Length: 494
Image (cartoon, rainbow, N blue to C red):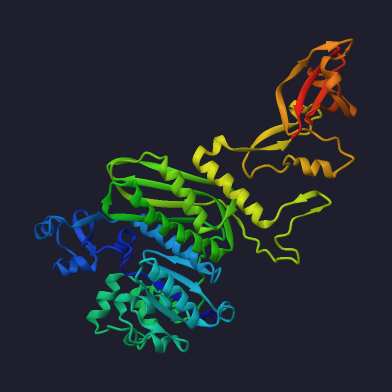
């Protein structure tokens, strides 16, 4: 039965303002609809402004006041972002437009140490995000919503008794019904439920009494919960506007901090960050940060974002910065081992320490941020015996067949080693008596290795490959072309 579940509702009464201010500005801010003020922050109230006045009237009081046209889609995006973060506590999270998020917590209380601790964590994080919130806890979804709207706290017992003092104008019903009830002398839910439901149904319709039954939990009230697919989007409106791009570092740090908190809560990593920097009078600019390996390190994210920002030309003025990330992978916590941070060989060859791997990835990330993703790539093996066709360039992090290092190749005695440096085109070696002219200074160490393939695609090769060393100790990969009866240099070993 629905009343056996525990519902927590978060209501954001100042959401229309806080999607622009995040409660971090000391400037007066007005939210308007059709040039009429509908919401405002406390700084604007301190100037004597109030909802219902026109923008023109507000400007006569203070010409420097900030005002924004209400953006309902942005409010829904903010609720979606909050719901994604709340997914850490329960998968049963539902967005209640226009300003609330609902959670079913009965299955999560033991895991997080009880309702009080869950509330404390939620309220602390929302306060850090600059959002004011009213919390309501009750035994049905609608009663929890009413409690949050009225800022009535929590109830863990009988629903009908708990909502008796809730004003009926808070109920999500037609305001004409509310007006009729007021004329009857009914102002709160206690007075409302003293009336027979059959009479209320006869006068106000079946949908109204159906709503009341869901409110007190006598019939189920199924909810639509958010999808499991993670998604992060958050933005900051800059009040006042800025003109120096170095001033973007602080809001960038704040957005990346929110992303890092989201990743930590959902046990995720990401390899892609997209900043959108905009001003209402200019075309937006995007700043993309791609990583060689998925991460959730705030320091690395910020360092790469700074590098990217340095080489980006922005518009003269900036009033908004947005961070988007939607490419995620699961985080795998390292369990550690007896020989942590120790380098040693295994059957598959050289095995680098975790610290060495971390620095390697960080170097690649910095190069990618400086030079661009198209300038940095990795090599992948291709199933072809012809050396010039046996590899391909791949985007960082996308290859499933990485090229082996020379140490890995040396560790496998049965495999014919390959040089990491392959000439763009084989270089002809002068000959004397059908052998390389420089053979006197070369010592054959290994070979021949016959490669005779490609007849099926009109690019045949017939070669005998050798590994040779010169007097200085350098190793060369040379071959004898059977079809041309000539010698060539094809590669150089490290």
